[in-house]
Length: 290
Image 1: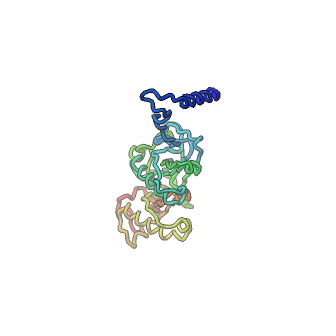
Image 2 (image 1 turned 90 degrees about the horizontal axis):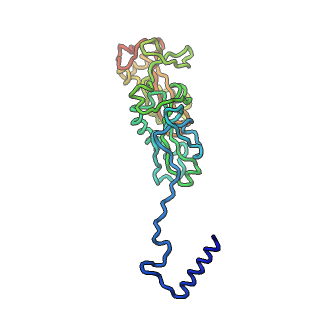
C-alpha cells in the first residue's frame, strides 16, 4: 500500500509539472468537500435503569452494566444531569457543585416517587464521573435512588421493582410507628393501632456543621427543632408545655450523605408510656400533658 501511494504521489506531481489542467468542475482540492467528522462523544450513563451495586460506590466505566429493574438491584438511576460549564474543579464530596447536583436530584426524586424519599426507608445519592473521566471532559452526574434497611439502619436493601410512584402506590411503606426495646436502641416497626412508644413525625433541614451535628452538643438544638415538627404533626400548640407532652428521637445523615448535600433530620415522637393509636392530627387529646 505504501508503494502504491508513493507512485500515486509521483504521478500527481508529474501531471502538475507537465501543465495538465483539472477537468471542468474539479478544483483540485481533495478534501475540502468532505463532510466534517462528528464530534467525539464520551460515555454518558442511562436513566431509568437499575444496578446491582449501590450507585454512589465509585466504579470504572468498564464496569458499568445497567440491568432491568425487575432484576435484583441496589440502586436505580432516575435522572442523568449535567454540571454547568462554570464548574471547573472536580465536584468532590462537600463541594458546592455536588450539593447543587444533589438539590436537582432531590427534586427529580420527588417527581419520580410521588413524595419525599425521607419519609420512607429510601436513600438518594449523586454519582459524578470518576476523576479520570472528569479530566477527559465528562460532566454528567447520576441521580440514584436506593432502599435502606430501616429508619435506623442505612445499609442497602435490594429490590426487584422500580421505585417509580412508590410513595403513592404503597410499594414502599412510609415510616410509621415503632416499639423500642428497653434500651431505646432497636426500633421495631408495628401497626399504629398496636402498642408502640414512638411515631415518625417528619423532618427538618439543619444548618449545623457536620462537626457540631455529630457531637452531643447539638442535642438541644435538634430536640427543639424536632419539637416544632412534632407540634405540626400532632396539631398541638408549639409552646413550653410541648416538652411535657412527648420527647423526641432523631436520626441524622451519614457522613457520605452529608458530603453529597443531605441536611435532613428525621424526627420521631417519643411516648415512653406507650399508646395504641397514631397521634397524627390528634390534638391535645391524643397528646396530653404528662
